[in-house]
Image (cartoon, rainbow, N blue to C red; front, side):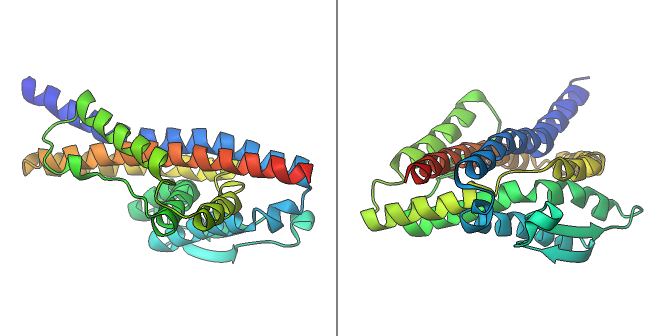
Length: 262
């Protein structure tokens, strides 16, 4: 009985870390990102979505296209930035199709729909590293053998320390440059549409099946330490990306407001 209890606990942890947490953090960030785009349009006009938010749109659509190709979907059309958006109502688009009998292609929908959230976050994290020489230390997970509050708390503290100190070692030139670039991305890049979440939902069940299978294999080969590290890093990374995104979206809201007063 104890074996079954331990198995279900691991399955639950993996599903929470790799399915529920990414979904919820992307959803929360998307709601705030949508507000940012609305504020951009209301304060600076519809064309500001291209002039100021164009980079964010390009990264957003590139994320969809990249993961569509990664999961072997047939990509029919990619439009990273639609300068004639007034005629179609879309700033960019990726049209793709997949084989319904392929588990790999079906679970790919989960990642394709949610891709802009992670793509924008990764780009911002890389820019943060090169512009501000700031990064997050996840070495605390290397020798961990279980997930507990203390471990997650250490991870959260690492994220908060990174956010609080990211401007401490940078020059004013790079600080100003980073805020401008972050605004160009965060003002539009995080806004996931209803269609994006519909795509995510189509991949949820296949992804859950695969996660359960991976968990079973890891437990058979007694790879609990690997699962611990993977679950911990995924939870922290997802929440770190959400916090990072919210901070940068707030930067963009401030910049948009300042520009509207000029």
